[in-house]
Image 1 (spheres, rainbow, N blue to C red):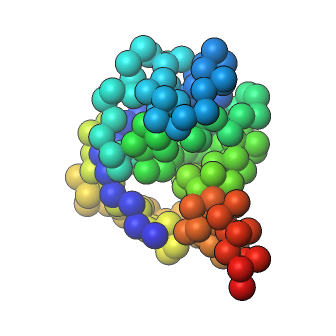
Image 2 (cartoon, rainbow, N blue to C red):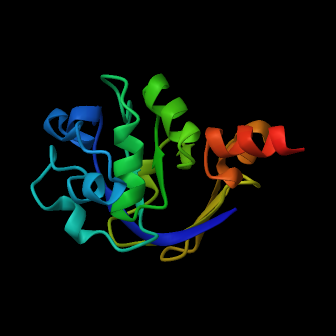
Image 3 (cartoon, rainbow, N blue to C red):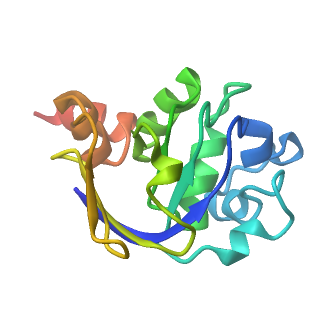
Length: 164
């Protein structure tokens, strides 16, 4: 599972209201959620994203209320993953459940600059800054998490398991 894209950066404590403001929780169409992604940070933020881009963030990304809408909005906006110092526990699990990769990497904000091109191998636990030429390792995900991500989310994973 390899990901390659341009880096966008955010700071610490980006909560789920910043990722997707509560006034959009009644929306169920992922593309509409994507249009409002990170609107709590800045209006029109999602318009900057190109498919495959990678979000680099600080500590406690996705803290706050439990809403699957947040990782769905990030994916629908075109982001391929979020790499952060740490994640809110519920956000982390929701991201995996909807098939959106999230990677923890200590000191990540000192390793990449906005606009860098990054390639990550989620299975092997390797992320490369192709702009600087530096490579970093992160803890590879458990096989069950990789299987859920490769299935496109928990519901797809379960559906495949019951077909067997």
